[in-house]
Image (cartoon, rainbow, N blue to C red):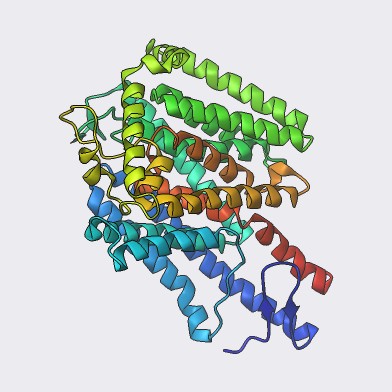
Length: 450
């Protein structure tokens, strides 16, 4: 099938033989895109929700299905384009650091720079799945991205409600049935901090939908309630890192609203935050206040002190392999040689995603991480500026959500939890493509005068 049309990223190119042909081509292209985008939305939703709900019960199966699902979605998107001899990608600043980080990991395997090649190879497949999801999310059209975010926000609302009910009626088992090996159960997670990390990404989506200028009254109320519940459970679960990250998110969101001269929206956000605080203190049995009180002098906390010790030990690991690191996924295997304290527990993570990237991939990989984050905010802020109303774009909620998880990653390892990591990369794909998505429909309308 020959289509006499070419659509590229940016407002530069739309060519056709004539206006009539171009209009017909546009209709055909929209229909194909609509079908493909619907499948992507369903695929994203199924993969992400499955990974979140079952990881702590069937961890290896969840990872395998995440990898297979992302591969099938990528094949579905690329095969029609490859068959037609034309593969189109929207330009993105984030591609370079993502690809370079992947090449560093491939080099660890091919040139045996990894101390244990098999483990790094396994982690590489997982990273490839995240990269595929990021690429596909970056190709979503604006309307499709909005639908996906709506589904994710509704899922977060339902999950937060379930987690709260489970916390009020605990029996020490996930879903009241599967026992957890360790940690404090909250929702489908055996570790309450990982639940907090998930809600840090989902709660801002609901809150920004509540603040949007286009939301109807009943929709606003739904998203307000969803945002309050999701935000409140971050405090109820007791994750101190989650509490700090959520506070940073709200400050960041409020700053963006004020910077874009939306003071009334910022006041609405403040009111929502006050309601979240009232909800938290109403449901608190004293546990949350103790966790908050420990933040006044965190160095006296045993958990914080042990994490600082692990960080110091990790820096010694970096000293011995500074350039390309020990190999992706190898921290728990190598760390016992550098551990400076006695324990009968397995230290499987550094509790700092940035430091762990430095240990496992060296200065080269760590530079890619910083490059990725810098480009993420460059693209996100640029895409926000492209909209006349900051609250009318799907970029805002995901950008705030990414901010929360990046802050929390300073004191935990949420990005080593497959469901959380996959969601993070999907949100990054949406954030970094907002301007192109918004411009595409306007571009076609401008050409044909519709």
